[in-house]
Image 1: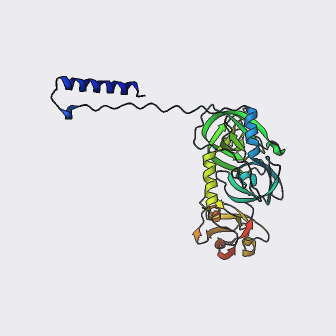
Image 2 (image 1 turned 135 degrees about the vertical axis):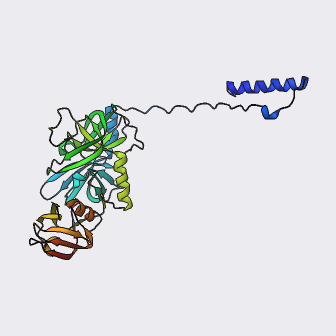
Image 3 (image 1 turned 30 degrees about the vertical axis):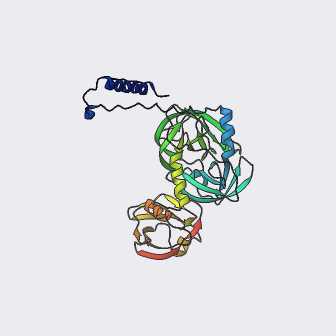
Length: 358
């Protein structure tokens, strides 16, 4: 059936033809106006299927793993989100930072898995894990477009307080694009994070790495900090303020790790070990600590030495040395040049060992 506009055009055409048969008018084809027939508007997309809190939890819990990372000195509890049936998981870097062993329990089947670290980006607090021997696991539904708005209701789900079972925390989006200084609850270290989703849900230790979901149980973020200080000099706010890495940011890192592409912030594969801690020095990276029996120890590096060159590239700060290490792997051979206590230049060729993720 033609539209009303189309029907009127047809009627006019018939009337003109009828007139032509009775009394032919002059033919002026070039002056005939073009007529555009309006197309019907596309139907509006159906509204999202808003779920009850119980339905949200029922959909989210099976795609979670609880994590325990053992650094030899302390165990760190966290949460992971299952991305693939064969056990690729995304979590926070700070959950697995320094871990010698990591174990996971899948909340869909109760099975326990040994965990391998595929890669990480500490600057965005994201790590990518692999559950050994996993198969046929349920996977999370991820948001594919940034449709989140301030005021949207959300739910954070995770291994709160490391108790081994999921606990939901409900709230609303209060800000987007936030920058914070996150402080580790295990070692007190700080990390500056940006581009985060801020919510007023009460995210607790152990929730780190778990999902922030919308009312359709779709993952919109990876929970990374609760009641973090936006300014280290100010006390935490009285009202809950928690933060999540947008899922698009997290998945960009996941995809980069899985494709094997390192960068200035993304490390792929096993972590190399030099065996030192360093700080900034006007001449380079000053050594604060040397591990006994490490490659640095065998090379003769000592506390107070200042590294000035790493693998043929000048080192002007501790950050630059860390960035050079990101692209390296256990077994790589590197040249290191440093200044000793007397200011004399020394050098050595060092084979990197394997260490925990950093």
